[in-house]
Length: 275
Image (cartoon, rainbow, N blue to C red; front, side, top):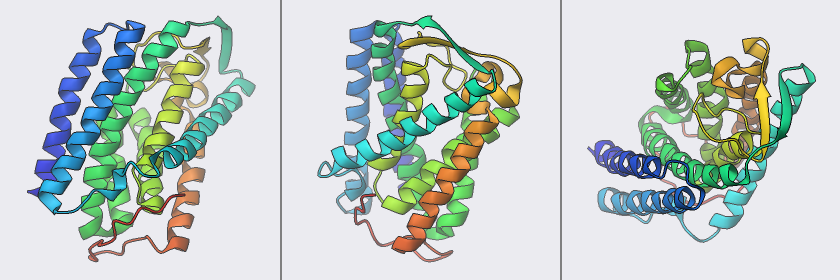
């Protein structure tokens, strides 16, 4: 019941928030304000429902230390995508045709904030965290990572391969980031950095969705495994490889910190460990 209450509350706000952001029709200031407001509402509702159902303070979204944790995640996610798109470009799969749109980048900032916070709270904050108490870190990481990839099958231009790539490069990695830090601000930062640098800076398609160009007017091309096809760079083999490397790094950190939860052992620690 705890999982249903928490997931249901966050999903309800996420659904309403998505509709609200969509109504802004990519108007830069309106989409920015709406997206940030939805992100804040999601965090508030998550904290509220955790307090009600678990009788504890949700340290994983505590305001204290949030800026530093988010910033470190932002650097990881943004740096990852910059390295991936540079590699794709070296293989001829990405080119910049000119400047894009500053207004588009601003709109994407708000859109990305709402989407990222919704996904992190649902998949890492609720599903991974609660499943981990019963299944342990490894099984929960695999299960929720695959669910995260499967959820993206409904995106435009999605395929089984793109869903698997999202599961590996996104679902596994972001769950590992939470497992290592026990702080949702880190995976939120990683996810936001990856998505915004992808669409808001390099102008690439984010998970197959149609959106305005970011700072650059960039285009991917070539074989699916290089540029990711119509789904975008997240379906590139280079995104998958980057996700594997960072996932391993976070899991090694988790093992060193002793935050890996074995099978059948309930997780009792909600202490915020900042990477």
